[in-house]
Amino acid sequence: MIGPSPNLGMTSPEPSQVNFVFRCNSVLFSNWYHWFNWLWAKHGAPLAGECLDIPELVPAQGSPEADAMWSQYQESVNESKTFDDHQGSTIIVDSKSGEVTVLDSDGKSVAALEKNVGLKPPDTLAGRIDALLEQGSMVTVNKFSRMRPLDMPIKTEWFGVESLRRQGAVSREVKYRISVIDEKTLRSIENKRKATAQLLARLSFPLAEGVRWIPHAVKPLLAKEMDRIDAEGRDLLKKEMKGDAEAFVNARIQMIVKDANQMYQDFFPDRKLDQAVIDQIVKGLVERLRNAAAGQFVPELTFTPVGFSLRGESRYNSPWSQAALLLNSIAEFPRKVFTDIYFLRGLRTGKQELLNAMDVCHEKIVALSQLEPIENRANDELKILAEIMKSDMDNRKKCKRMFDLMEGINKEEPK
Image (cartoon, rainbow, N blue to C red; front, side, top):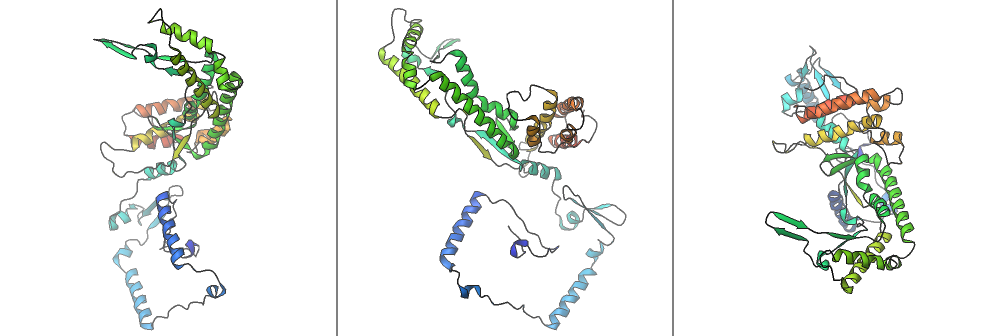
């Protein structure tokens, strides 16, 4: 908290004083902590009776001459021409945005601060998007925590061939993979392994290609879905292995040797793989299955706060395109839920619970869906959203138009 008011601003409010309260980032907290640690060690004293016996302070008394001079100064300010500019003016404060509008005696808007101080007003729409981003964070997948596929790649060198061979304009690429799990079960396990990407596609919104943003309210729902998928994947693998990974692989050694040799004989018909190669394949399969059984099916996620700023905006650097993509996805979500019965397929979270958590703009259509059929309206507005994104209007105007649509403000469709 930064400001002039004492006692953390819990005194009587003064119109000429303002305090700023903001979330402390890790760098600021670290610097504050080190300073306070030094201050505590250098000047800290244990609390005792004599420390608590603080004498009352008596405010200093000014002279009558100084008091008269201060009163004279106040009168001169009140009579100044600058103050006269505000006589008869009306001040209107927007209850949603906090935007202040000053009207003169004729009811005309007066840009008093910009005119007299040269301070330009902030972009209200940019502030709205920044406030929206405060409701969530960017989410990324830690690919290094992802469980490896259970079908293992095999080095082509073990089969006596090059992985890539090129002859003039023709090239040939050879890859080998092996699995001791049947194809149907392997496909089911692989679906669980890749399910996080599908979850994020439903429970978050795109900021850019490969970058997504998730509302804070959705994170617990995402965690429940990921826990479910992880448990289902573990059950599938446990049911298939029925015990130790090494015993499971050893029980299938004959199949491994037979299938590997058949592949080898595509290039060397009368030969068989060396036992050392077979041993390497078996060792790799056991290790892969053990790691899968001990690990988790779903990868780790990282959540990072993001904001919206117009600083540094230029021809090649504009945040509005990213904001337009985000708003379009936010607006599309409930409308697709209302019109596509398969849109939430695969999720266990209730439809209304998910709608409420994803509704970061407090959309009118979400509220109306509890009172009346909304499918036709949702279809019409999906078409409008598509037209907005395809239109030639700049991205800032697209953002404003999409906010209007989500608020239920009807305007002409974009050209």
